[in-house]
Image (cartoon, rainbow, N blue to C red; front, side, top):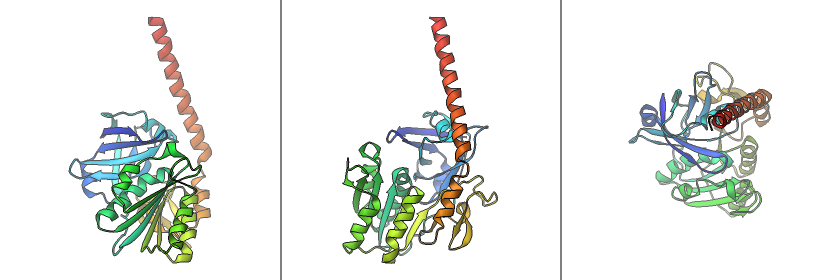
Length: 290
């Protein structure tokens, strides 16, 4: 079991958990992930390691409460325990010989982009960061990014904070202005990563995307996380999660990611109904006792 040390809401949809796990914290590197199981009846889900502290023996994850498991995870508080936490899994991001980088995060993907920017910046790399959100209320980690990058650009779809527009708009503006980078790292929704790759391709800018497809065991044995890269089947858990953004088959990836959408929706609804029933029962019991 792994104990939750800290729980903090970052915005209305994203939550940060700092979890006690000395062995993982000692070995973790930017770009890697963990697989967790909340309880004995729970599914295994992958979550990128957003930060780690080998001295305190903790790893940090950030998640959006959208599916059954993340909703169950969201019920836990500081001091509670998670049944299983396995990692670090996957390959760390390759950043050798990089002197100038641009890191692009979209929505909850900013939680994954942060450790990449932090690692590069503290290694002496010039790091420009572009993070995008739907609106001002959803912006998170702004202060953390500002401490761990050279320049930070924030975009919002509605213009309520930062610059109005998408991350690709700002990225193209920087590239057209003559900014030179050795590497671009894009992390966020699949369509966003696809558009970033399409934006950087004419400039010949090497672009990495972090893929998080359906995953079960994290060892490459189940085959659930297969993706097609440059016409070859790869497994995100052991060959990734980082891949050349110009070579990923995004159409196939999006199709595979949607395979279990109906089942996920149904499971979340059942869980919601159970929670409501428990809440109603508690209220009725309180009323009788009153």
